[in-house]
Length: 434
Image: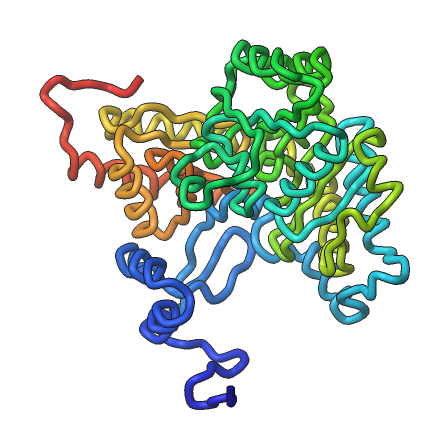
């Protein structure tokens, strides 16, 4: 096929919105183009800090991004390291040793729960889930217990343990031997483990993100650890969305002093700059890969660019105390959202809940949640949709928000709540949210 300069975009070209929509319809996804038109989504052309900018250089406050941007966009401490690496050595031959990979693995292990010493860098969170499942298989755990509402990715193995049938059904049959129990129900987990516990791996999130910011009962994660240990099962903790400060602790596991057998990471790990995920495992679980590293390999996994970003990201989180900042900002934003929605449209809201900077606004209907998300976009604030629970929209903002950003967010939520109340007046019964 010849290169058609009249049709193909030039490097660095900024196309107009109509052209981008046409290219989406022709080559990306007709449905995505349609959704973008409904939302009135602009072109996302640049970013810096807490802001993303459209083709008219209009700023949007990014409180979305599906949990990636805890450091904001293009944090200079990460960008500078990655830029230097880009100018030096980008991808590895895989035959020689890679210093950046060694640094990243050591740095990541240093902040993981004690005893999780072995690190494999992946290219995404879903790939981390895949390797987590493979390590469980290598350890003789051919059965998996997962949770309803859980989300672990959409590759075939990750989808097999993702608890939403709408995503699973078109791809059946998936991996065999997967059983689902209700999230937060320790008794149901105990019952499942009573059936071949020693042949089982349990995979769960400390807080369900795509499930709609579902927070389990106190001590649920530690009870899951106790049950797995007693039954001889492995515990795989998916902290792809919840880890590295998002919940106001380094890991969700830290809140209850839990050490899983396998820890999955991603999203924040990228520093918002380079896609990367990770699996962190105990020596016992990692032993088969220690003996034969070719049992799992990836051409791009652990490349120097991504590895440099990982080390810079963790150092930045530590140096700027973003874990503490996440806890403090999360409490403040959650309280503000509760007050605003409670004042203006409580009959449309079930609950405002969250931990750290993972905050869910649970509306009475999915359509109302979508209207609130669109109203926030009109106020130039970006939020995240919840893939497994459409009535919940999420705030996953950076821990680098300043006072102006917080005022912008508060004003936007108030205006959006007023819009909702106008669209859906209080019913005669005066029913309020729980």
